[in-house]
Image (tube, rainbow, N blue to C red; front, side, top):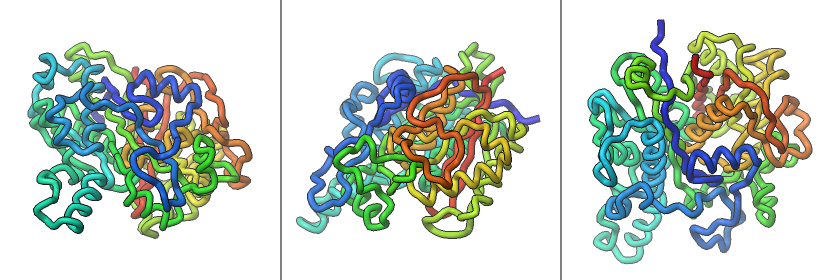
Length: 420
């Protein structure tokens, strides 16, 4: 029998709020976090909007001196981890001397990240080309590399178990949670800090995605309406940033310390389309099989799921293909599911999406609501499921599924359920 894995803490840094409460309230209100880009001058860019994290002060969670040695994606991750560990009641000490309050060798970190500290790469390349190598940032390498978010969480809180980084593009956050689930089920760890983080609202990333023709350009003058998953007028995704971090524990470890258990991580599966470097497999069969494998891992029938949190990027190819995935996996039950994409509000936070969307699923279960897909005014005829258009709906949820699908053909699906 598989060991139960539960969630005891959650932390959020996002375009719609920098705390769990703010994030939850924004989801229920259908609030958009998409606005004009402020982090760089967008002159010459076709894309001038993004889901930026605003009013972020890292020193609320991180020592000022330490924060200066972290790239933005790492600051996001450490701040979200601080929130999650605090909610889980797993910190001891005060201020900068806080440490993990459980066996540090049996505690780990598994985070998803896509592209590391891109703002550091950009700044250092400018210094290299303009002034030579001796003018580069001394900490260029340790600031930019993907593993530094997980490494810094371990350093800050004295976590001595595995500190791993999952890089599977947009599926990274969900795959990190799946890897954490397996580490706890196997008995290698009792506690894992897991989720995803990303901070790529920088010229290089916007320019690169713009050249791929994947970003929305039609509504830069009305940014809050630009991300519109499953709508007939979708014209590309909106890049976002942020971090969603969860504390996962074995059930026996959580019960032994009388922790407040929020939900259970019931199942997970990962596959690869082996089809195309940017496009999903178009029949939906590959992604649909991933959903079926996750249900099998959870020991649940398709009919047990009430809510599916969609990858829902607001691109024609993703929205239509993901709809096919759901029909393949769920059959007639797909039409009874509530399906929504919070990317309509946050934008696409790349590796941060998996963590944020897992938290959205758990909040939905906890509070009994279905987050809306905002800007869904005229559904794409090929997207004919119930996508909770524009306004949150309320009702009991026992089981929620979240899907993430990344460049390279990566498919990750996680299932969360009410803890019994």
